[in-house]
Image 1: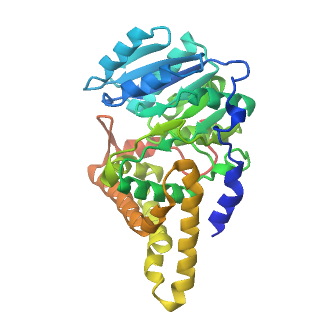
Image 2 (image 1 turned 30 degrees about the horizontal axis):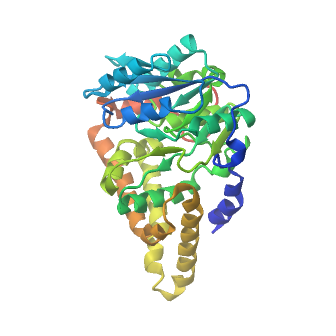
Image 3 (image 1 turned 180 degrees about the horizontal axis):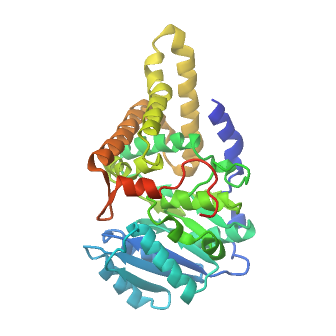
Length: 382
């Protein structure tokens, strides 16, 4: 109830970029270079790049990075670049240098090229499976400039193709409220409320350089969140905005596809501490699963009902920005069980393998733990 009441009070203060006041040209018309790293994304990268090239904001250039792909990703990039050489250029990574994750290396390499060649005021880091509405960049940059943002996250809209995707993703957005609170992101005193989303991380180039770029977090799997923490920890201006349909992404096909995605990276969110994962699982069971049984017992019926009412209202609050129906709250206990399974699966597989397979490369757990950013405390300049 406390969290939902806080959300009721705070969420209206998060800007909605669909409002008419953001349907303007950004003041000063700053240049933006969009960086799109991709490995084996032939199914998505073409449409992603086409939506970026079709933006109604003129001062946009795109750098697409083919990160050692084994499919037609590089060829698709090259073909599109040939049609718009002044706006899109392609970089190909043949070998991964030691001490780097593939994605952070690809983005760092592209950022260096953008700074040297384009000298843009902003860098936008995005993913190859993200689709952009035609006015997405214009509205986002207009808000970033007007709001003095050093870092802006435009929250992506999840494309839902199956009922089970809606059920699990609906729960994840509610669970996320117990983490960084969107309405506190702009508050420099709320250090724990830093948000970074790989689908849309817009950063001032000067800020990116000042904090050391991705070179300072070469081995971080959750590079988007770590970047956000470092920016906010350095006392810089962080902003977040909604805009349903401006930026869209389809996570994975079906609930098991989502679980597979989570298996790769969710353990790293706990900085590979099994005790923290077990604590999170216990918390979810107590507050999100146990009330399903508690409603049938007299002593726990009222608190269980209150819990479900709060969860249901939370679903309804986010329905307006995410498009995920509030009716999925009826499946919250089941989705919570699946979430716990995904957490444990990620931890067990990572520990059993002794590391993580990421973009075709294996990274040892020892190496990842050594280079992991702190879970708590200020991000700061590393």
